[in-house]
Length: 171
Length: 203
Image (tube, rainbow over all chains, first blue to last red; front, side):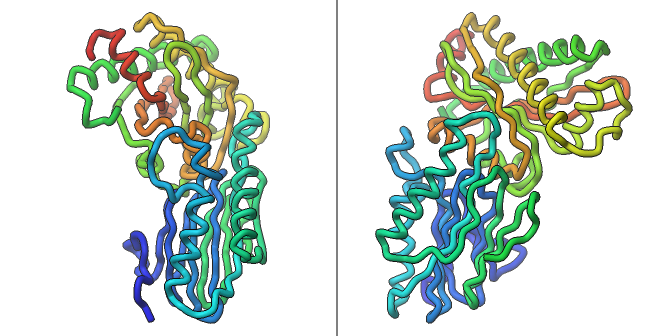
């Protein structure tokens, strides 16, 4: 049951926490907890398989490869990361009955409209990809101008969003 | 350009640019406050952009940052970053008040920091422009105050991941009473660093 459960590096302090850094995708299974720190204009996407108590978490940076000139990690794009995370989750077998929760997509810098729109465009593309994959969005904490850290518990599907501005929010 | 591909001579040239830029920034700060301001540049180095949050104390550490895009012969972006305590100290310094008077960052304080950060950025750029005989113009400054990782990722998304390497200039501004530690990050677009090094004759 625990095959391919740990993708990506695990933080030293707590062995059951799976860290997902910028532009990464990871799959884990209860009792592990998926964690992605410091979402700014990036969007954290949590996809949960309730029956198997498994889940995938992505830290999406940009909507699609058209938004970047240089090469690099393709998983930072919503159009790549979302189909990939669902594929990774589907490798665990079972019915593909997934639900999603998203957080992030803020405009960190005040006073610039071009930069402010990156967060909005990320959220828009993430939702479009989830609709294409027929995964409903159960809850979201997006927009605003504050950073968020996202914690994804796989037994209940609980997503905890932490920020300096609002403290702890549960999705 | 990757940090490991630079020669010692080129790294020295970049360090010297950082030193001279910080000197000009200190002069600007002294003119604003009417007090002598000393400057120290303990460290100038090249860091991959993705590792910058770690250098600044971790992804979730609170920082204030002033960001500007650069236009002209050398393109890229520049970021003035300071921790919460350092920024509060900067506000006190500018108001001629004892350190510790300012306790919170409201919109007035944010505005002061954004404008001062911008003056310091411009001082750096003027120094570099004179030395290299290049025109470098900054865009309007933008301010953010939140988790380091979120601020830097937003900058990286904005520049479209064009820059993979940042020139990190640690700077300490010191008056008789206080000391403000800040970091200036210069993220050149591809080829811009080569243009600068070429002008200095160390390609």
